[in-house]
Length: 117
Image (cartoon, rainbow, N blue to C red; front, top):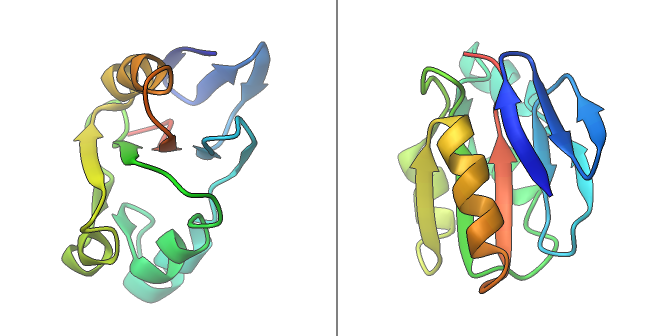
């Protein structure tokens, strides 16, 4: 279960993470590989398709992107095209975390959460 995040941290199943994370439909949690997007675009605030491909290891119905507390992270159009057959929700991280928790009870949800700006 994701607890409502605060700036610079997010708690999943009682474990605190102080970096961006990916939560898979199976419940597995891993560090976001934002260096892929940063290397290509000079910022980790643009979610590049090459980075997104890293997370497509489990089947999912809905992609929930927590865009940060102030909404700085966004999917690039090419990333959106990569998952065009899936439901995509982008929202500030606190709202995205809450929505992710509701959705994962009904659907296979993949979550990417930016924990700062």
